[in-house]
Length: 116
Image 1 (cartoon, rainbow, N blue to C red):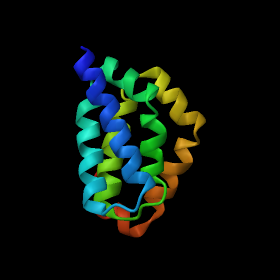
Image 2: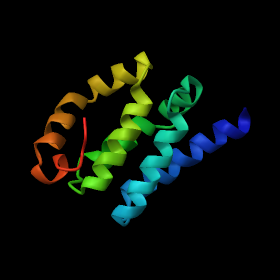
Image 3: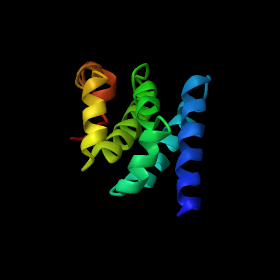
C-alpha cells in the first residue's frame, strides 16, 4: 500500500514539474494519460492525488493548452480524478472548474478531436 501511495505522489510531482516547466506536448500528454489511469476508479489513489495537489496540477496543465492531444489526456486525468469522488468534485467546482471546461471547449482546435 505504501508503494502505491509513493507512486501516486511521484506521478503528481512529475506532472507538476511537467506543467511548471516548458515540456513537450507529447510528454504532457503521456504524463496526464498515465496519471488518469493511476487514479481511475480508485478512491484511495484519488485521495492521495488530492493530498499531493494532483487536481491543481491537472487544472494547471489544462488551462493554458490548446493542443488537442494534451487537452484530451488532461480531460481524461481530470475525469478519472473526480469521478465518484465527492471531495475532488467539490474542489474542482471551487477552483472554477466549470469555467475551465467552458474555455477549453470553446477552442475550435481542441474540440475537433475531443469526443464526448
